[in-house]
Image (tube, rainbow, N blue to C red; front, side):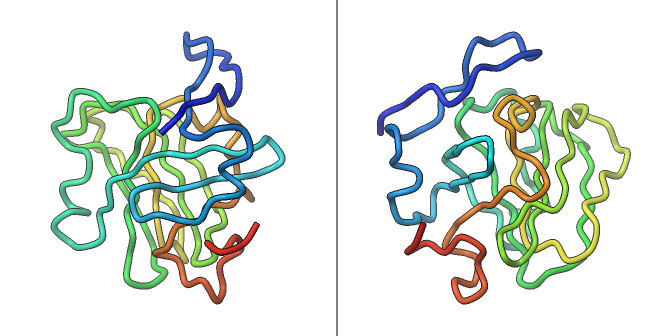
Length: 166
């Protein structure tokens, strides 16, 4: 898998974020279980993801990990839209949490969750999935409310960005 520079980063001490894909390939390729594609007025991005889709894996999340590669993340998937709230207990990596509705639309972004903090991070109601990535990346890339994410776990009949289309 190739890499490309997606966007210059300001404020996170890096010159660029390397995200998977060659120019244009994020928009042209189909979905895969082990990655998510995001798009918005800011452009597009791709992250390789681990899936947390049952109570045990969602409960474990990214706890006890000392690092995570820049172009990776974890996608938490619920069986149906619900109220979602997270905390950072036993999580050693600062994270951005991207909350998504059933269509794959970003409904909230929580930036820079503090490692080991047990304060509740409320994603709100109607959340079907949450993408966790390294802290600072959502701002650096431009991911914001209204951005779109695609992944095969979303119902393709209602997905704002279905797997088979642009």
